[in-house]
Amino acid sequence: MPDAPAQVTHDVRVPVTPAPGEPLPVLVGIQVGDHPAEGFSRITFAFRGPTPGYQVGYVDRVESDGSGTPVDLPGTAFLALRFHPAQGHDSSGRSTVTTAARAIGYPTLRGWAPAGDFEGLTSVASGVGADALERASVLE
Image 1 (cartoon, rainbow, N blue to C red):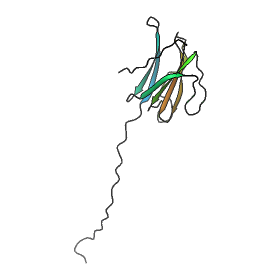
Image 2: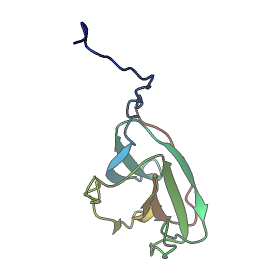
Image 3: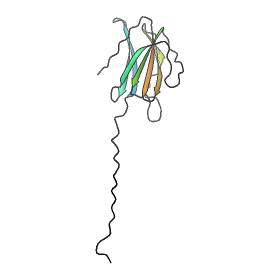
Image 4: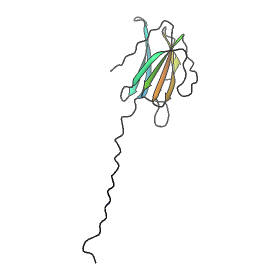
């Protein structure tokens, strides 16, 4: 009978999984307002989590990301806003924005609609009057 227990060892590395990254910014609110005395209308986007990057610019027509389906908007010009990385849905796929898209009818901002929530890219488009100027900024 042996005096000590038998021991067998193998050099096996334990895999280390990196800690999960920060969650994507989640679009949780869209608000509009008109400021006729100052000559502008605004659309404001609220995010939970970090502030995403964004791209804003005029497009000839608005299409849904992923499907290419046309998005119908009032106005004579169209402004596309794309947030990346970001999402506009929860873990069940439901929209995290409770405000319904709508026609507004302000002198410059005529309406807005979601234009996609696909592969970390969340898009919203607005219909504006032909003489509208754009300005984008981040509110802290």
